[in-house]
Image 1 (cartoon, rainbow, N blue to C red):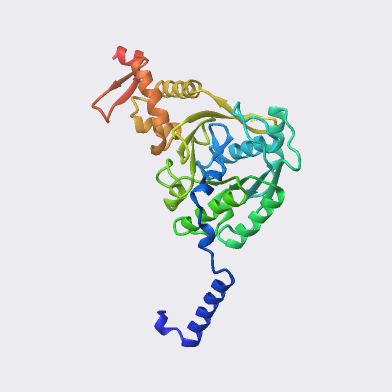
Image 2 (image 1 turned 30 degrees about the vertical axis):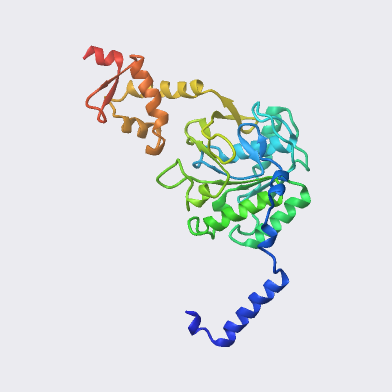
Length: 339
C-alpha cells in the first residue's frame, strides 16, 4: 500500500510518533560525532587471544558441521574466562558470556574435559552460559543480552550458532541487521562479540547467507575440516586491524569423556592423509583425484587437503600419475613400474 492509499489520520499518527521520538532525543546523530582529539583517546584494538582473535571487534567463526566449531569456541571461552593460555597463545582474562542455541546437557562434559586437559578449573564467574534465549532476529534480545553482559562484566560474548539462535531469521536478508547488532554489542561491552556460523551450501570457504556476514564484521575465522578427519585448519581469513591469512593446525582429540582441541603442525596434519591416500591406492584401480576425494569423504570445496599431499606423493615418486592433465589417474609407484 502506497502512502497515498493510507488514510490521512493513520499517516498523521505515524508522523506524530516519529516527531515525538525526535523531540525526545533530537541529537541522535550529533551524539555520534568525534573530534580529532577524541580519536586519539579511543582505546586501541588489542589481542584477546594472541594471533587468533582481537579485543574490541565483531567476529564470525565459520566452519562445517562436524569440524568442531563448538569445541573450538568453548576452548576460547574457557581460556579467556580463566586467563589460561590457549594452546600457547597468551590471552587477556575477562568474564565470558556463552550464548548457545542448543541444549545444555553435554556442556558439563565438554567443560570438564577442558578443565582436566589443561589442569585449570572454570569457576562460576569465569564463563556464564545462556541457553536458548529468544531469537537473535529480535532487537529486544540483543538489548537484554547487552545489558546482561555489562552487568556480568563480560567482555567476550560468543553466539553459537546463528541458525540455532535465530531459526526465524533469513540469513541473507537479515545479515545487515545481525552484523550491525553484533558490532553494537562489541562496542557496548568494550570487548569482542563472536558469531559462530555455518559455511555456504556450495562453498565451504565463505559464510552462509548475505555477504555482509563477512564484509561488515571486523574479523572472520575459517575452520576447515570434516567430521571424519580429526585434523582441522583454522585461518584468520579477515583481520580489519592487522595482517590476515595466518593459519593454525588443530586436532580434535577424544579425551576425558569428550573432545579436546589440541594444536598440531601442518606436517603432522598431512601425514595421516598421505597414509590414507596410499592405502586407497592399494585397493582402487587407478582412481582419479575426484574419486579419491569421494572415497575420503572430502567435498570438492575442500579438495586441497587431498590434492596437496597427493602432489607431494607424486614428487616423492611414491605415487605415479598417468594421463592428461586434469584427467590423471593415480597408482602406487611400484604398481605403475610393474606395468
